[in-house]
Length: 149
Image (cartoon, rainbow, N blue to C red; front, side, top):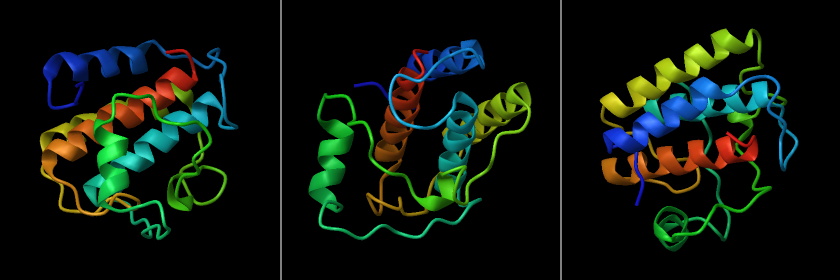
């Protein structure tokens, strides 16, 4: 299973981010490629505790959904809404300069993979380091696939 704890998997994600450009078109959803870059940055900042996000409480979150989301070998579904704090249209970081935003994403990704996480995930709740690294890979992969990267 791929994870950001694995150097090869992390290098794959970094390369895919490096190669993405404003000309990449979305395959699903409503975000622009610039909004997706900022969304990923915001999500990693939430995980690092740099950005606050209110917990999501509904009948789908909790340990069973966390296990399914992180360990079931299926792609994540399309159209699952994010928390407002990570949505560029609601309260997240709006895109500015694409290359600068991409550089910010690469920098926050580097920080994310290099320090422990004590913040609860807004949807999955408390997570171990192993779970955070798996989530980080899956979340980045999901959105990079959204833009064919």
